[in-house]
Image (cartoon, rainbow, N blue to C red; front, top):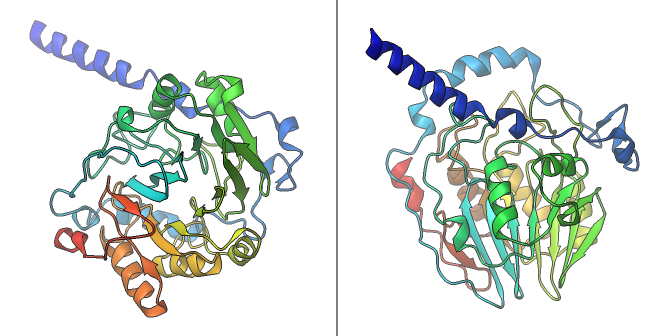
Length: 359
């Protein structure tokens, strides 16, 4: 009996320890008065330009049932190949994909880290929530000195409390974020002078870079309240090179406008995974992603938002299989790096189908 009590007590203590950061992980509450400067902010929330739906109500029950079955096909059949860290370069244009939406853009001597999530789960809890399908290929201390840390929106698979805390300790770069996300960072004790909040079409100059928040079609929220923070795609402009990062988004006609105003781009990192019939307006299909790349006048396409977390009903390898086929049909230059692999945008490797043995 004593042994059972001790075991139960230890389990309760472990659970309490794991849950202790949940309230903080949910984040802060943005001040609506500060958001009113945005044309996207009305009636206390942010809005897309045309679409308001996020999840089709008639499909939501079926989606939940489908998530509870056929889970094996949504995971790789073996270990995902990782590429170990290498010394950072100082010139040119190189992109390292760490898995899911996390990526490092090294552009003309500057380094921008997008949507860093190094936790084992994309969740407010270490006990529940989608878990990694492969390890993080590099540790945070293997990153170069960063020029900026850029966040697209506040969902847990893009904005991660432990990673933010670690980067606050180990880096001095500012966090450049859409409007409202500063409230989360402030709660997590990021210094105010390291937080830069932007509305769509606003630009921050950081070192030799210009970082511009551009439109996206998505939503936000870390608990029950939605859309009190903004979501964005991003333009990174160096002295002579440019990169586009889509963040999470449905396909919309704003891509052509972004391409006309800010393109052409040497490379684009485009969301291709976690799409579904129940949420067609907030995540692009692979074919949508290729068209978005064409619309923004991208050069080399690097697909992101796949491989690392199971967040939708499609097979694990389906997004990249479909992207490869579509880029061939549209004669689009494509690179599909392994997690941790640095891609030289001026000399990208040929696509070799490394994921197909795991699909």
